[in-house]
Amino acid sequence: MKLLENKTAIITGATRGIGKGIAEFFAKQGANVAFTYNSSVDAANALEKELNSYGVKAKGYQSNAANFDAAQELAKNVLEEFGSIDILVNNAGITKDNLLMRISEEDFDKVIEINLKSVFNLTKAVIRPMMKQRKGSIINMSSVVGVKGNAGQTNYAASKAGILGFTKSVALELGSRNIRCNAIAPGFIETEMTASLPEDTVKGWRDAIPLKRGGSPEDIANACVFLASDMSAYITGQTLNVDGGMLT
Image 1: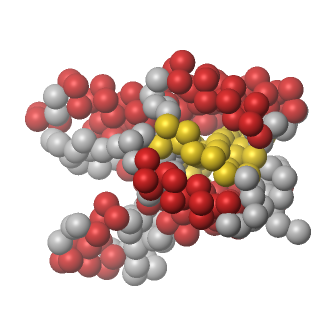
Image 2: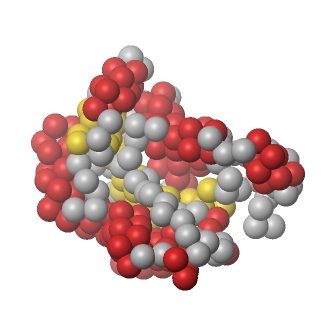
């Protein structure tokens, strides 16, 4: 029996990196996957095809998670197409790093809007169907930076720390309806984004991690499968640090 058999998941920002890893692992565990993407149509088509090859139903939706109405529309479409929404993974996010003295108001607002408001938008959109079903698992992608802060990332840290408070509050509000809400705080995860960094920088980061390596999208995806499945039926309101011991 696959861990996510007959469950339908919405995953935001799934055409690359961590989101793509989650989509692939969910499909392998039997979940039907509705995923969103912003602009990469070719990557979305390729992912849809790949996920379908695992024998599940998969569909990509071009949708801006930061737009409230678009999130409502997405949930409505997924419900019509798939029949249920059992899992939501709020993964969409961006960075616009700079020292506080140099961050523009626009760069602050954009990061909050895409990283934090999107979590509100999508969660708000799925809670009604989840309450009707009397079950659901919401997983919010935070960051090690949201837990401990980081110089040069005040906007990103604020958005990711906001997710932690939001997660706990949702867990308290919806626990009586058997809807669980947890956060994952990834550490240094090696993706396409980090591949362009200088090797010395990456080596320095790896050396500072107790497990002596960067994480992979698979490491995050495995944690997501656990929190999405009935194996974690008694876990809600928690932040799972998947960081190789960085915060130890």
